[in-house]
Image (cartoon, rainbow, N blue to C red; front, side, top):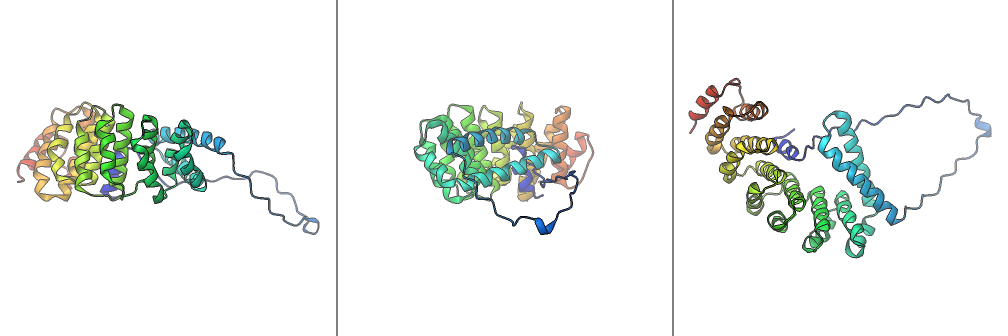
Amino acid sequence: MSATHTLGALALALLVGPAILACKSTATKVPVNLAKAEPYVPLPDREPDPLGYFLAEFDESLHQWSELKLVAGNLREQSTLQALEQSMHDRARKRRDELLATLETGAPLNRRIAAAALGFTRDPTVLGPLLATLDEPDPELVQKALLGIGILAQPETPPEALRSPLLDAPDEWTRNNAAFALLAVASAGASSPELARTCRSGLIDPSPGVRAQCASALGVLADAEAVPALSGLLQDEANLVALAASVSLARIGQEHPEQKGSVARALAGALEPARAERRTQLLGALRWLARTDFGENARPWLEWAHKMP
């Protein structure tokens, strides 16, 4: 797994493994009399579920998907998540046109579900309608549209469209979903000064989720300008934020040799006062940056760091 993909997975907890889906039949085999067998007649295609039923069922899947995103760690959970995502993709893609119509003219609740579902279509043509909803007065619709944009993860997504929801929204969920979308877009290969600038602005958000996702996005972007701010986040009260900052700093130090000394000194300097869990995070980032191991004590790491320009 590449460094970029590792960073993209951090804040979102998205380490999805291959799906392992198998079933075994234990039914007793019965001899078949081929001479008396009826000719095969294909079953007629099943009529699609009414749209209201489809949306209610999809909303349940969204709740399940959100929970799995947070906890999926072992292979079984990752396989379940991957299978669910594929099912949601297949269902959403088949109803794409209806979802777009619902997003435009449906009832408020249905519009929200449609916005998230359109992301699972993985169809680049739905990006425009999703972006158009970001100016709507319904905050829950904006949240779901940002979620859909993040799931869609198109590198062509204009970062300026995500800047206002990230920086100006009064509610935490809107800002979190905007940060989610920014991280997903960066992980998909987008790269622009505006994208990096927007993510740097999110590092001071009061929500740990926003800070962590923006910090991870800056690592994906290998944004050298973010080194001072990310270094400050090594002392963040939230371990998730400090983890994202430490890995992103190591990534930047690898990609920009002129920043390696500054990054190394920041990571090594944070090692001595760190609690056990955070020490593990910092040591992992230092070993990744140095491509060697100076042990668990801070002093040899500091000596190594201060030898670099």
